[in-house]
Amino acid sequence: MTLKINSKAPAFTSPSTSKNNYSLKDSFGKYVVLYFYPKDDTPGCTIETNEFNKLLPKFKKLECEVYGISKDGLKSHDKFRNKYKIKFDLIADEELKVLKKYKVWQKKKFMGKEFMGIVRTTYLLDKKGQILKVWNNVKAKDHAIEVLETLKSIVK
Image 1 (cartoon, rainbow, N blue to C red):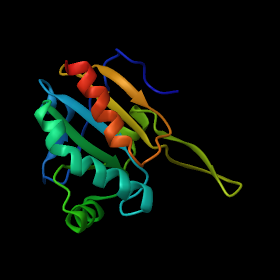
Image 2: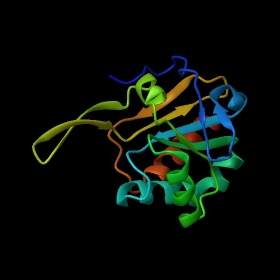
Image 3: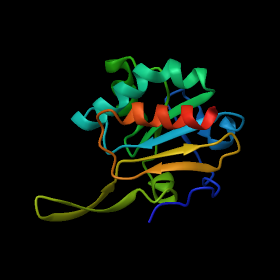
Image 4: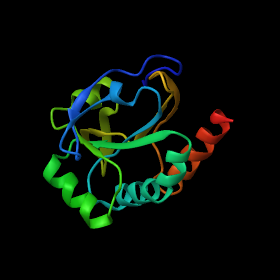
């Protein structure tokens, strides 16, 4: 279901917490981590976001930018960022455009009910916007470390 490795990551422009629209092409020339998560300030998403935040200097050293994306609006993102002092931008996709392009808006099951939602997924892109690696159905804990180790092995 997800996008293929070595294919071009879908282009998008979406509102981000830096108060500017973020465009994927703004990051060409750097590696990019796009992690899609279900909801601001929920347990798993908070663990995942805090881990990326803690490791951010190490990602930056490897010329890699990190962006979290969910369908929450900017107000929610700003609250989430301020609460945990998150140093990277969160991208708002209230219209689900990016989520659908990256195939992370899917049917989910919870307590016997089916509903549409965000499947926790991470994409690692190279400096030209090609997909290097995809993680599906991510377990939040220690995920950021795994992404960092993968990036290190590629940058060598």
